[in-house]
Image (cartoon, each protein chain N blue to C red):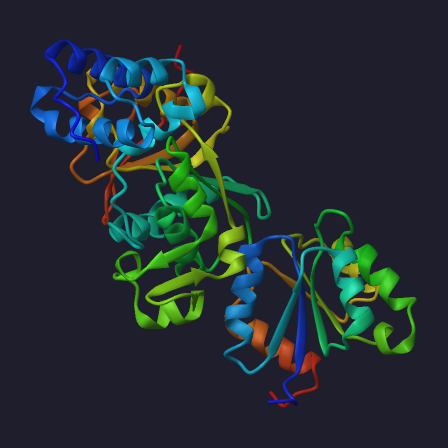
Length: 127
Length: 284
């Protein structure tokens, strides 16, 4: 059980966190949660995770600011892969996410299978 | 329990008038047993020896007696996934229609009133998680309101017994609840946090207005306790609480057409629902 990959979901909507968790846990991931960027960065100080799933629009610290901050940190934290999720689907949003350090971008609503597939891929798991 | 004497006709009438004015609920001599039992319970709880002394306490609202009194009179029969054909209607039809004109990421507001101990608003959250693939695409806000502050406290705790969960499959219970004490389960924190609660009296316009406007309102099995006049006031208040084009679901024995002409009847495959017309102005 110890080698389960750990995913940190960063989203202010509790239903969304629960929704992703209900998809990812049965797929064999360990899931942690944070309500915003500030809380996520705090958690990352003490835990190493295999993947971040980050919403863009959040109070206190939005997802892109969080990623920018994250990429400046020491290597253990800075090198965490990040999947951005958002309802925004314009090319400029994708570009902004890439610039902030996102590894991949999925537009909500996210299909259950797609979420598991990208989570596996970004965690370096066999598909 | 004290052996308090029965209420006189005048006392009974006085009390029912008072209850009506404060809550819109109607009780008559045919419900004397029901009313008297609760009054005697409250007299005993407050060590009031006579009805006049209890009634004085109630009217002065000493030690929030009005709240206790109202709590004793509300009916709180509820369980998860009660009348779930309406929940099916919510995801199959109502939300499909409501989201047609909404941008992704915008808010969807759903109101459960009265929500009693929380089974209904939590059922809505649970149902959406299980049956609505757009759950992460909109800002879903679920509000549960009730006139009874004790049931709201219970709702906020999110602890339920066997009876409340009887309609849920073991799979759903295992997924969204954790065992608490014997024969009790606690709802997952995220589900609990997805619902907000507030105190609302449906015939008090100030109360209802404060809750804002909703895409869908579930208002089941409460209007049956009101008389015609309060029913109309409640219906008008609820109309104002709907966004134009918003929907209201009543209990299966209730009909809005008999109460107010403001709403349009919509027949969907799973349920009959009432709608505030898309171009419907404010009711004044």
